[in-house]
Amino acid sequence: GESVGLHLPTLSVQEGDNSIINCAYSNSASDYFIWYKQESGKGPQFIIDIRSNMDKRQGQRVTVLLNKTVKHLSLQIAATQPGDSAVYFCAENAGGKLIFGQGTELSVKP
Amino acid sequence: DAGVIQSPRHEVTEMGQEVTLRCKPISGHNSLFWYRQTMMRGLELLIYFNNNVPIDDSGMPEDRFSAKMPNASFSTLKIQPSEPRDSAVYFCASSFGTGQRQPQHFGDGTRLSIL
Image (cartoon, rainbow over all chains, first blue to last red; front, side, top):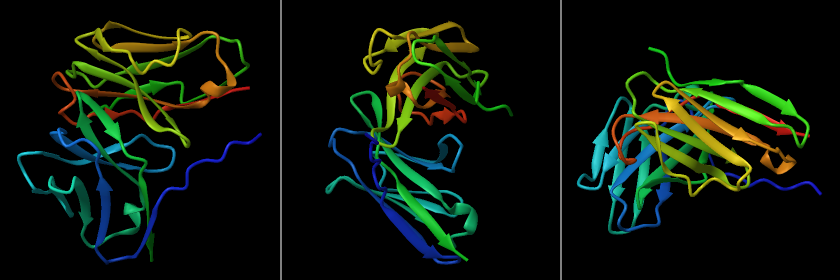
């Protein structure tokens, strides 16, 4: 029979608004985290990373926040644009391997 | 700058056939990774090379899968014999350094369909 794929969490935002994509990670010993953007038909594209000795890091229009107490990572995108529509993955370095989350689909409404 | 280059972009073949996927990492990167992406299981690491040496192949699903890195600028992932459940998108990624605490840069993948 036909297999059923996972339904990704979806975030829908208005163009120009800020987006916040959340990620819960599993391993309290993880010391490196990374966000990727994946557009349809393409490979994951590196956005920003953060090490566990930091709790915030900023890039161009993006900010990553790390809360080690509750094992939570977030990606904030300022002034979201239609080109930001994609699936966003967080990944943690757990035991020497990058472990990827299932992803969140961001949809930007014009 | 050229990114990670994978070929072919698409492959459709019948079960039982041998499939070879190819990857050229970014020049100067010394770590190379093969991943498989499916809707059901997401992105899974299959194998990881550092300085052309396989470091961790615990993600390789079965003996039908093999990977080689004969030099710093080329790697292959081979499936023999292929089965319909191998259908997925296969990504290659490369990075500087050892371990996995550096950004990995991905190619655009090979979409593999086994009939």
